[in-house]
Length: 246
Image (tube, rainbow, N blue to C red):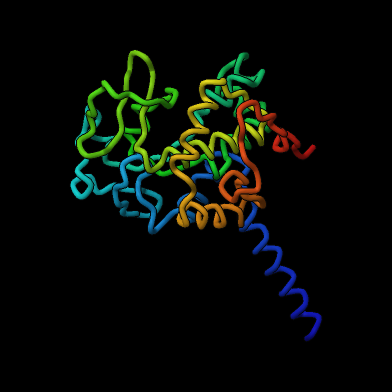
């Protein structure tokens, strides 16, 4: 009987460990991200409440004053947005040059891990996710907001997206994390912008709590949220996420 309990306990421990394992592809990551962010999550850029029906997230557009700019069906659903776009981290990989994102998903294990990294995923209103596309972040003082009370601006010609002040530091720390972990290039202008945003919008208790929840699955935290690391102009990424299983 004692042996039976030891076996059962070991199996439960293994199952628990497996359930906490980091995702290895984007589909796994989206399912885990919902468990981590829900039920108290709000849409990242617009701060709208989200109602979940199974795996489907429905933003409360009326409650947050959101106005559909163009795409009503996408505005009515939550999508998992890569804060650092797949284009940014993908085009620095050889697989992207030989066939774009589809080829990277098929042939590049490191790309799949980057695409599935939970620290880089946030719940966003689908239309905003689409409007942001792979545009760079910036500030657009002369651009008119086109999403109602949602405090974002988009310049489609310059391909620039301005987020709300209360998430700019979050964005900066996600970029620092992705660049550091996967040895990605950030331009000098990007670094200067994100260093300023990091200082203007420091990590909140909510961001630190989310960092801890994601840590339970990824096996490490975002050190730019916890304060273990600090990004300075000219910071040399470590590339510790480039080591993959053989």
